[in-house]
Amino acid sequence: MTPAVSIIIPTFRRPQRAVDAARSALAQTAGDFELILVDNDPEGSALAPLRDLADPRITVIHEPRAGVANARNAGLRAARADLIAFLDDDEIAPESWLSELLRVQAAHAADVVFGPVRTRLASPPRDHDDYFNAFFARDPGHAEGIINVFYGCGCSLIRRAALPSPQPFSPTRNEIGGEDDLLFQGMEAEGAVFAWAPNAWVWETPEPSRVTLAYTLRRAFAYGQGPATKAWTGPKHDLTAIAFWMAVGLAQSIVYGAAALGGFLGKTKRRAFAYRKFVEGIGKLLWFPFIKPRFYGAAKLPKQKPATA
Image (tube, rainbow, N blue to C red):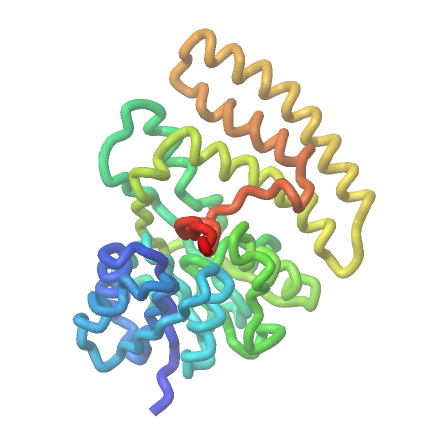
């Protein structure tokens, strides 16, 4: 029998994280679902641990072409349901997560439903704990119902019929991310209905290697690039919007650059928040595709040494 929901969890070289996320998915009180686990490591490092879960609701697949869009598309190919839930491999879902997503989707006839993300750090950072907790979280404070913005794919429910194609995530975003933003941007242009489910929250426990200023500021730069990138990748290049966001970036970098310098010199407690705003402003100025940071897929694989004669 075809399940009502397919939960997709892609993973890349984080087998224990993927197992923990899968166990939280299996514990959902909404019982009519299947679980698609996608190992995106070319070496298949998570295949054995995921298969060891040995639950009849699970399908484990290997997508050896590294890339976040490739992994999500592979999950969709294997999924059988009309409703698709995405959970990231560093997220843990409480038992009511899926039920809440389904309830809000039905109540508001939504094409996509998003829920909050709460940060749970693996260990206390040496400094900037408030900043890191806020950085990895997603909770804009919406009331339940229709919203006019969209968020990332992790912790979401999508109506398959609303997708523009069977493989909707663009491989051009395999290394830089934003494959979900690009998809939802296109769906928004076609009139898709987005909704917010405030009680469909998940925990996110970022890798300790990501809980650093260096990593988060690289991500902040990429986030800053987002608005101009959206204007560039729309149905037509919106040069007016690009110019607007570059002007916003210039003003933001000046204002928060001064705040960041003052915070650095004074070692203020919240200085990292100013660093982030400053770097996001620089990202709005330097939004150009050829300087986008690469966080995923082949960019994270060891560089192969050239063959010798």
